[in-house]
Length: 411
Image (cartoon, rainbow, N blue to C red; front, top):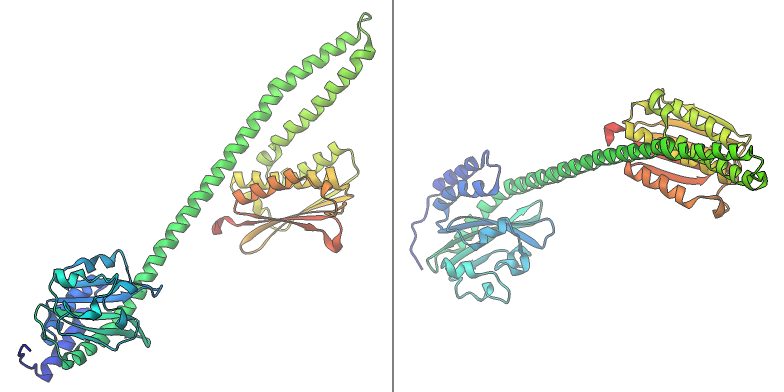
C-alpha cells in the first residue's frame, strides 16, 4: 500500500468549492471534466479521470476523459453498449461502487466482449468508480485510475462519491441541454426539408400546369385548326352532286362532335378566368360552364365566407385547388345526376377548407365514381400537403368532398 499524506478537512472543503467554481460557464462535457480535474486531483490523486454518461435508450453510454487519453474517448462520438463496459455492474445499479487494487488482474473487468484494452494499454492499476445519480437514478459514473497498485482506499470512495454528487446535477442539466440542442437541430433540419419539399412541390405544380396549358394551346392552334379545315372540306363536298351525302353526313357529324369534345378539353386546361380575375370568379365560371356544357338543369351555388382568402395563395396552390374542385364537379355531373351542386369556402385559424356538395346518387354505386378522377384529386392534394375526404352528404344523400389546406403561414 502506497503511503499518502492525509489532506486536512479545510483543504478538502476548499477544493470542493474550487470544483464548484470550475464548473461555472462550462457548456460541454469535455471542457467540464478538464476544468474540474485539477481540483479533484488535490482530493483524489489520479493519472486518468473519466465520466461515463448513460444515454436515453439506457443501453449505451458516452465517455469523456482527461489526463491519459485512451480508446474510451471514442465513446463520446460512437457510444458503447453498456453490456461491454468494464463497469457495467455499477452502471446497472448492481454494485454501489467498484474499488480495484489492480484492474489489470481484476476478474470483474475481464469478461467476454468487455472493452477493457485501455486498462492494459495505459496500465491503469488502481481504479475507483462511483455512480453519478440525479433524480434518484444512476445517470453514469465517475472513474479515477492510477498506475500504482493498491492506491485507493475506502476513504477515497467516500470522497469520490461526494465529488460525484457535486458533479451529477450539473452533468444531468448539461446532458438535458445537449439533448434539447440536438433535438432543436433535428427539428430545424426537418423544417428546412419540409420547406424545400413544399417549394419544390409548388414549382412542380406550376410546371405541370404550364405544360398542361401549353398542350391546350397546341391542341387549339394545330389539332383543332386541322379538324376545322377538314370539317369545312366535308361541308363543301356535301354540296357536290357527285358525292353521296348519306356517306359524308355521318363522318361530318362525328368530326363535329370530336371538335366539340376537343374544345371542352381545351377549356378545361386553360382556366383563364381564374388567372385573370381570381379564385372565386374562376370557380363561378367553372360552375356555369360545367352545367351549360352538360345540358342538364342543375342549380349551382358558390359561398365564400373567407373574404377572398384563397386569392392570397400562391398561384400553383390556387390552380391545384381549382383542378380538385373541377374534378369533383365533373364527377358529380357525369355520374350522380344531381339537381344542385354547392361549393363552400371556409377557413379556420390554421386551414382553408373547401366543400363540394351535391344531392345526386351518392356513393352507393361504385360505378358512379370515377376512380381515376378521385385518385387525381388525392394526388393533387398530397402535393399541396392538403387532405381530401369524400363521404356521403347530409342525411346520407348525395356526395360531400372536403378539401383541407394548411394556410401558408403554417406550411
